[in-house]
Length: 509
Image 1 (cartoon, rainbow, N blue to C red):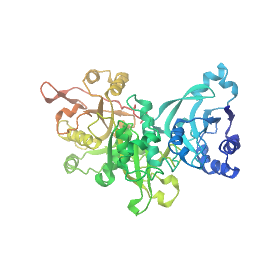
Image 2 (image 1 turned 45 degrees about the vertical axis):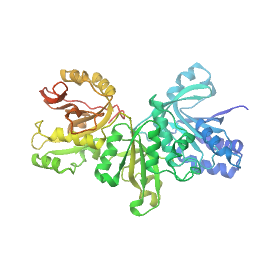
Image 3 (image 1 turned 90 degrees about the vertical axis):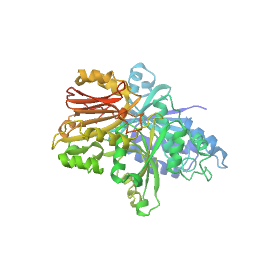
């Protein structure tokens, strides 16, 4: 068997793929044409006009082979076991680019990822990693990782977030979400491993009361259980339990923390029958207009509300900014941008348009014990409790996120504004592996990506009634920190000054 490799531009792609579908998968021209015109064309239309393609067939894909040997090979119908792969490059390509030094030297910087096409007709889009840079509209912030690849015998690295469509037999939206989450974490951290479809089935076999194949989908609890079994500590949040406002804020907090969230959406509130799982991986950029139009946060806690009202404080929460979020949806091309309250608006179907997010799963590190709701409550208690001299009519903008102490200290070292006594003091402090960070600013400063208040919490301490939860708290010319020897918080006077906000989670604000 020999491998076929073809190079083409977008105008040539349709004919090339239709012919390949017919020959490689032994399907009729009408079906091959329908696959391109009804399944693939939407993904292709989203690409920049400068994108060119390398088509390789037959291609052995590990994810599809796992499904093939676990399920498709057991059926009477003869399913093909090989796939077709599309690789994306920015700019025109020639065969010499893959064989001569001049072309080889530019391939990596021009490489925009790949899409596997599997013979599960008509749901053919398989394991894919497409860079946001390949899209016409890439003005958003999202999580990506690196995935080794090889195109026409040249080793390359694809950067993007993993995506696949469901085949509706072995994997549904729930299984693809589990697969994508673990594909992402295993590419970033050595503690985790990929989760092919057969492994997901094996993990869930004792948590299902019905047959697993053909798949009937999974409940949120089952998704959380599977992700936990693969090494992450899952936390499930429910709109019904938290209420609309806090639920939306917590979703935003974890997105700001650079965590991919498994999202469950449905139209139950309109007595509908749509239920779907997808992944949130980022958000739109924060514009000056969004900040200017941000309304004062409606505080629901009576204690905090009384303090805010008594002092006439204008309190703004970064999590209340009505941004669009970036979703990975296995029914659609990757990187869909929609508002929190209308996550399925891109379906253009009334039943789907009515869907809203009912639950989401935050995949946390096993040693992260302090969750987002409790962290924000503690920050407000310390900030508003009287330790800091917040003047009447003050304007406060709060931004809360989770990160590693290693990344945060590295940021401090590199920020020239922290080359002061207070910055050196923070960098020398003992911290756990993971921390909650709250930056305090106002509208004028946050538009300049500047803050003047900083609170750091121990994410390994779930008890917010303990003062030891606070590692550092500073606002303008006063800061407090935990003194282990004295077992109490100690107050100090030193001007914090303004500093640059942390942007490493999503690589910008």
